[in-house]
Amino acid sequence: MGSKFAKLDYDSDHFRKCKKHGVLPIEFFYEFNQKTRHGKSGKVFRCKECIKKKRTDQYEADPKASKDATGIWKARNRERSREITTASYHKNKDKYLPRYREKRLERRLLVLRHYAGGEPQCSLCLEQNHEFLVLDHIEGGGTAHRKELGSSRKGEKFYKWVISQNYPPGLRVLCHNCNLKEHFRYNREGFSVKVWDDSNSYKTRIIDGKEYPVNRQLSAEASKKYKVAIKLECLIHYSSIIPSCACCHLEDVETLSIDHIDGGGRKHREETGFGNQFYQWLRKNDFPEGYRVLCLNCNFSYGAYKRCPHQEKSK
Image 1 (cartoon, one colour):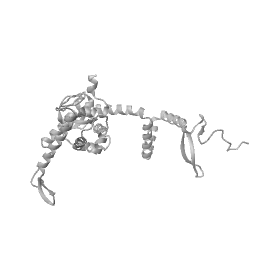
Image 2: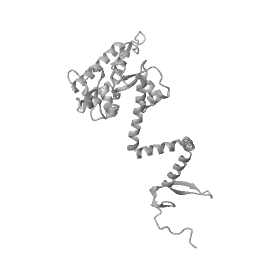
Image 3: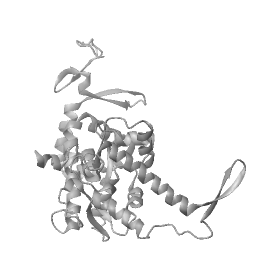
Image 4: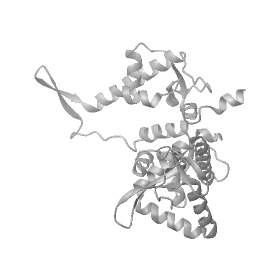
C-alpha cells in the first residue's frame, strides 16, 4: 500500500503540479494562506490558468452577477484592489497607456464640442487645433475650482466633472493664449485689483533700527514694472530685439514664455521658483543654454503631446 506522503518526482520549491496542466514552474500558481479544518494555517497553490478559466466561465454564465460580486469585493478590499490595479497597469503599461490617452482625448473633445456648438475652436481667435484649446470659466475662478476637484490630473478631473454635472453654464472654449490674455484683461479692468485706502496704503520698513513709511501702492506698481523688465530681458536674449515664438513666430509678449528645449520645465521651476523667480534665476546664471521662447499654445502642445501642429503643417 503506497504512502500518502510519497516522494515527489519534481522540486517543490520551484515547481508545482496542477491536475489539469501537469507540473509547471511556481510562477504559474497563485499562493494562498488557507486554514485547515483543525484551525492550522498553511500555504495552498492554485493554478492561474484554471482560476482564469473558472472566472471566465462564471462571467459568461451570468455577467451581471459576476460584476456585482467583483464590485462588492472591491468595496470591502479597497487597498488590495488598488494594489492589484496599480500592479496590472505597470505590468501592461504599453497596452493600457495608448487606450487611456485615447479615452481621455475623446472625453476632452466631447466637452469642447459641446461648448463650441460644433467643431472645437477658440471663441475669440477661432483657433481650431484641439491641442491649443482649453475650457475657460467666463466669470473667473477656474484655478480655485480645479484645485477643489483634486491636486493631481486637474484637467482630466475637471472634464469628468463637467460631464457628470450635465455641462453646466458659465464655461467657454479658449486657446491658451487667449485664456492668458483674458486673465490679464480681467485684472486690468479692476475685477480683482486691490483697493488702496488709508487703512492699507502704507506700511513701515525698519532700516538701521529706524522706521520709515512706505507707500504700498507705489511699491507694488514698481515691483510689477521690475518683473516685466526682467521677463522682457530674458525673452530678448533667447529670441531677438522683438521677441517672438520660435515655433509659430507670434510676437505677442504677453503670451510668450521660456521653454526648456529638452523638457523638465515644471520640475526645474519647482526648484528655482515659478514666474518671476525663474526669470531671475536665468539672469543670475548668465542665461544658460537649453532654452527658447515659445507662446503658451506651442509650449503647452510640446509639453502635453511632444509635438506642435505648426511644425506638422510646415512639413
